[in-house]
Image (tube, rainbow, N blue to C red):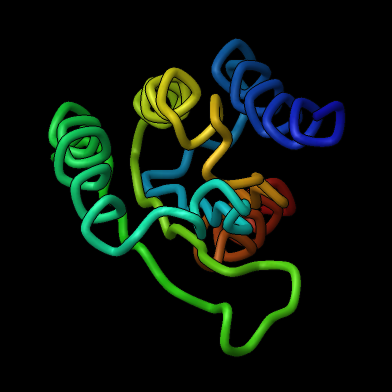
Amino acid sequence: MKKLSILIAVPLLLYAFSSANPNAMHSKKPYTILVLLNASPQWLSLNRDERSQFVEEDLNPIFRKVSPAVEIRLFDSEYFHAEVSDFMIITCNDLDQHKLFIEMLRDSKIYSVPYFEVKDIIVGQENLFEDFNAHFKKDQE
């Protein structure tokens, strides 16, 4: 859990610093967040109807609350990875909306039973190096 807290805190601190720093680069690029999950025995013990019911009654309302600000895509990977059975790709422009989404998940059975173990959270922005290159080129002029 300590690792998870650090993984969430570092990008948020960088975001806060850049917001407070008038010389910071600001990117209009959306954040892409990978949430790597592993299904727990509690999840696997549910039959398929119970799993579908959980998604419909518990997860879909969360997804609707954060959309359209947060786009969530769900993927299966248990066939290809021993420690990560599922992952989410989340896209958003506002990290506060991502935090809201994670808090709502934390209040659900995903975390509380738990149905899934969060293995890692990875935050990035596509081709962000281009912004840095432009910034440094501007400074050299």
